[in-house]
Length: 197
Image (cartoon, rainbow, N blue to C red):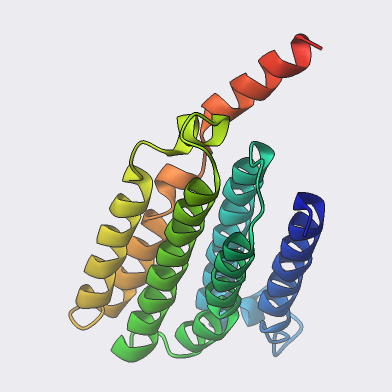
């Protein structure tokens, strides 16, 4: 499969996930702004889950910008990543409908952990598909500090869901902070490459 087909498939799945997220928000029961108040937690979780999908989409895009090899293993690793992130609407809806309960919040954490692990696996699979002296390996071959930070935050979130449930969601979304700005070295490399043409 070509890189463009992999990107198109991933973009399509991500778009569907975002659509499902917004469709899970019920219509306000009333004709005044106060009718939005009972939906506040659902709306907050929707916005944060939307941010999650777009942050991962942005980082995925950066990965593929300098990817030169798409192997069968890469396809399956990408599918594993899409599988984990596609469960996000279920966890978001459950946590949004049952505010303050441990199990829904812990499930949110488990989904975040699965997404983190699957993205880490995708990066490692791409590294295995590229030569040691490739541009991809140059940028992504030296550790994955962002992934380890995020996984540690999410593991803490899962544990704390049973102490104070709302803190779990806060920590889950806090785990996204390092990912909000993708590796800017990729942008600089691509800009320099385009200038040399």
